[in-house]
Amino acid sequence: MKTTSIHTPTSICRLGLGITDITPPVGMYHRMWGAAKHDRSTGVHRTLRATAMILESADGHAAQRHLFVSLDHCMFRPPEMDELKRRTCELLKIGENDLTIVFSHTHGAGLLTRDRVNLPGGDLIAPYLDGLPAKIATAVKEAEEFLEPVTLTYASVDCRMGHHRDCWDDTNGLFVCGFNPDVELSLPVIVVRATDAEGEHVTTLVSYPCHPTTLAYENTLISPDYIGALRGVVENATQSPCLFLLAPCGDIGPREGFVGDFAVADRNGRQVGYAALQALEAMGPVAQDFKYLGPVISGATLGNWRFEPQSAEQTRQAQRFERRRVEVPLDYLPDMPTVEQARNELSDLQTQESAAQTKGDVPETARLRALVERKRRLIERITPLPEKFTYVVDLWRVGDATWVCVDGEPYYALQAELQRRFPQQTLLVMTLANGAKSSYLPTREAYDKSLYQVEVSFVAAGSLERIIDAVADELGKWK
Image (cartoon, rainbow, N blue to C red; front, top):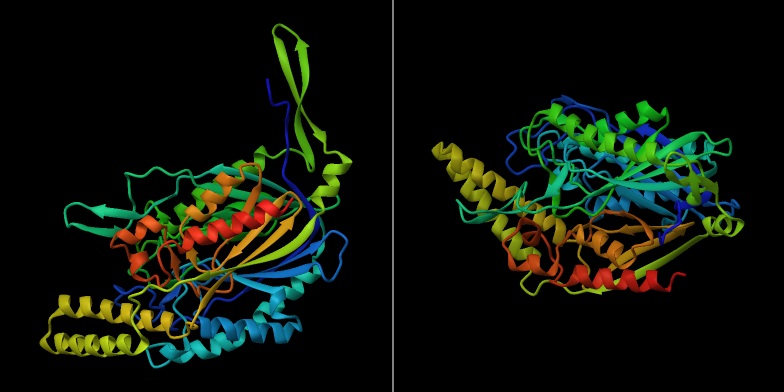
């Protein structure tokens, strides 16, 4: 036997969690999908949340504090994202560098951009966005009230709810974005248990790499997608709040998805929730490692393993708290259209859609309606782009774990490759950190395929690999 001790990844810090309801009003603009026939939401499947998490060093040093806010929305475009962050920080009287906003990425919350106010239900967008900072502040106040010393324990278990979704359709001769049965992936549910000074379980963090796209164009209800049921399973079992953090999943989606049946979303969520409970049940006592203590002579010679308290040095290491930032310059695609070109193409498509509608050609009208939406979203993505693009990654060393916050929607390869290079490191990767300025980040080989994720990308092939190398270089320096 070469291994006689299995270390339990541990962080000792201070943590507080606060939750508030941010469900939009029924009837607000809701159309997230090009194929959707509706514009307004018609009801609520499950309420949406804003969850505020304060993370602070064990000594409570004010300079070693960061605020994470998770919103049950798909994402906000740069104008709305920048305004939300600025106004929230002003309200809380903190610097913008002290706040990271992430998204659960549900596609059932609606697409909220202020330039859609002229669309059905769009008149409700601005008042809703204007009210978000105050609601976030409410969650932050609650998090501050519950801020306390905690010990974080990390574990992971595989869950097969999510699957690869870059799929070649042989019959129609094209790539589709959907369940690909020919690729096997091992997707981890990473679970973080927070226990207080008395050893009571007070909070659970759950990370999983799968797009919340169970509910799609047929769904007219406001919904957190599978995440609502996931949280419900964990919270009912632990009697403590659960925060979901989306891991890199640009090429991952639910095995069963793109439906209008919210029962499927709940079923998907329960799969991940039960996997999280499995990881929780397998955890040992707080801050203890599983050690081999030697043979015991019985009817058989038994191998005696027991949980034993971690050493004083391990406890010291578990209190590490440090932040670093990595900035990676990326190139744009050489054939990226200009905003003017995209607007001309949008105008042409709208003219075609109007003509098809006048003729009563329902299938063609539906097709062009979807293409109009695609072009509108292209304009929203490229309009705010700077002349040169710098990709930002924030890293926190929290005890034995490294928390990684990345912009946009990278492929799962980002997490998988970092974990491959650092197999002994505990990594918690969060996507859509402060929005999606970079859009999708496919792997280099994906650019050779006519994939949706490549079509909506604007950074050059090899960008994801450049980011992985830069983050790995920094992790390698972090002893």
